[in-house]
Image 1 (cartoon, rainbow, N blue to C red):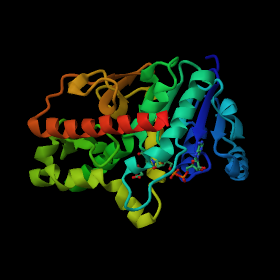
Image 2: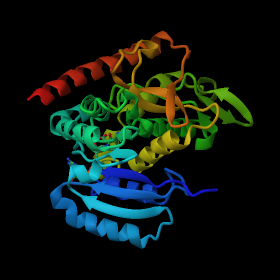
Image 3: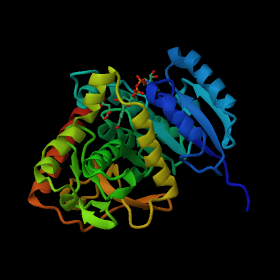
Length: 334
Ligand code: NAD
Ligand code: LMR
């Protein structure tokens, strides 16, 4: 078989905490394929160029078979030119006591600028994941300032929330992670997100059971389970005095691997993507939905039955996103 064409991958915020874990997974082939050669570009701000020089040395010293070249830069034109994938991590993280939307004014300008850089320099087929918070709203701003790139090529990360939810269910039911499937995260990557297990299954004792039957604790599923997932980022900050980094990098790798390599037959994953009005979510909001992916194209899973409990929670998080978008657009006008 002919060797695959080389792809160009950008990681921003490459000198940061998430970057250090993520770059390893990009370079070793876990995301784009172990037979997929890639050129890696690391973008950060000028004062971090010394750090990136060291990271570049380490990446080269890993002797990865998929890594063709590594470039470190603080220049957006160099960073975004000809890229196939953009992993937009670089942004300020929150500190204890802050909500992610408190980062909006500081971070949204980064995504306006990077949206313009995508528009001018990236391939029109580029796939973009935004990790920097508030992730959904930043993704919407980047898309707005990149009108020549299809909006559906922009996404934000809620996979960490899905992974967190999956772990909570596995631990509660006394099964392994592989035994839990079908968890959905709806809406914003924020404390209003709705982790929904009403369509999820647990494989227990050789039987496939609905999560409500397997857990047998409706009060927990409707209460503490949801709260734990919604506030997990804050709990990690309180304990580590730094925000999640290893788990965020792993979730980013999961998201991009599934986007480039497809979801398993019959399985969906959660991704914040531009709403097309599905499930009554206002069109254009970058909202987390269950999606399936084939040939690098995602599709929102249709026809799931949503009860009153779920519908109300899905609306709360949509309303928050609409407000965040209005606030972000106001910052962009300043
Ligand atoms: P960090 O402070 O360790 O690293 C951020 C890096 O971004 C720094 O090296 C900084 O210099 C760089 N940076 C700042 N402005 C930049 C710009 N304009 N261009 C390129 N690089 C720039 O932070 P971190 O822990 O790596 O977190 C990064 C972001 O990811 C934060 O906003 C954090 O809240 C967010 N996050 C999101 C999720 C999620 O699930 N969506 C999970 C964890 C963290
Ligand atoms: C997370 O969910 O861990 C990140 O979004 C970081 C944060 O501020 O919570």
